[in-house]
Length: 606
Image (cartoon, rainbow, N blue to C red; front, side, top):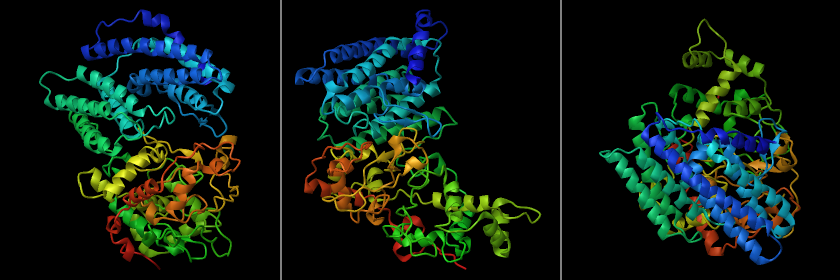
């Protein structure tokens, strides 16, 4: 349904576009429009050739290879326009380059099937592309017809300088975190070439807005050219040094561009993606609220039988996990259904819990405090206990500015604990130190491991830089859920299904059965056992599972698996390098206000 609307939106503006006029438009904007009007026809022609090649598609290798080559050509033309289309017309952009998996809409039961260039790639690289010819042809037709009418979007399009700069900034983040990693072309492996097209376009556009004596602007233009040259000289996907490209070219460029925008647009306060305050949530700090939350985090009075606190399961000395595959139900010998995840970097997720059933940290905390299995208390019971405690009454009154002996409320308790949890985002690992200038912070093996992680091993296409979780760049406002086919135990030779339905409970669509939120792998060397069920005790076991192609790869009938089921072909040495890199993501204990090993974080207990 949505794609039909998109096509109508394009087609409806065709005649209007013919009447477009540049009268009164600022010169940089006019030049941008002229640039786009030269690139759109080239994209349409590439889409048309792709459609024609798929019409000839059959089971022979020549026609399949020809379609793959023309798909790559079409993608390269698209990336010349992506900075503009993805920012200014994100709905229309989905007709071209949305992920090759089902996407849930606003409600839990409405969804959009996969479509566009990524879906075409997925089908072309299947075991029998000719079998899906009609579906591929339909996708190619949508891309072609939408591209034919794309110029209509330029009618009355008069962006502000702020908007153009923002579109460039977001595209730079995509080049840093998505394109070279093969996020949207994992089989074509065209991410390096696509990055070149993207940077060349934004370099051209940015030059329109740089005045002759603009020293800072000229410096950014040189940085863009240096990045393009490096990509052109090192364009082989598997061997590409992503770490060098990111650290030595893109991060300085990103920092310079952010400073450039911040100096010219006062309300902007952009930061590097490896800056601890990169996320908007990290910019606001309330020390008193955080301190109160710290105290409540260790408060056993919050549980129904006063025997368990948040810290009982999220133990600071264990990097805010419990070290168990599954913890116990409060007051019983039975086990909780899932592994206890770390709370470090928990704020950098759009949803909480493995199954995403909470929309915020505050909601997550309330669910745990009142859940029968975890803390087994109630809002009324917690409020009564705290309101009868003179010390807490004084602290809450001070932090929340309560007057006239107003009562402590459950919502305030959750806000305070959430503030403390949000503070657990130090970004002080050896890898962070290396990315911010310390050349000796990581080893040669760890550097190799990162390049494998972001390249051949395909880890970075789900664990996105810089938080290394499922929070999707460049907006970092939505967390991905993936179906991996994790088995019930670590026995990969005789695997058995894990029947946890995961995200399906929240969003009851067939493709969400067994889907779980992609967690952070920062501090992963200290937060085992791993996966939602704690099935794997070591990182070696985790890598072996991924290397074999997930559940499908080990023979489990996971028909809706989103992880590619083909072997990654990692050698033992490559796996060792990836594990070494993962170890470099460990934050030092003192980053949390004290040495974690010695539990120097103040533990408040009654």
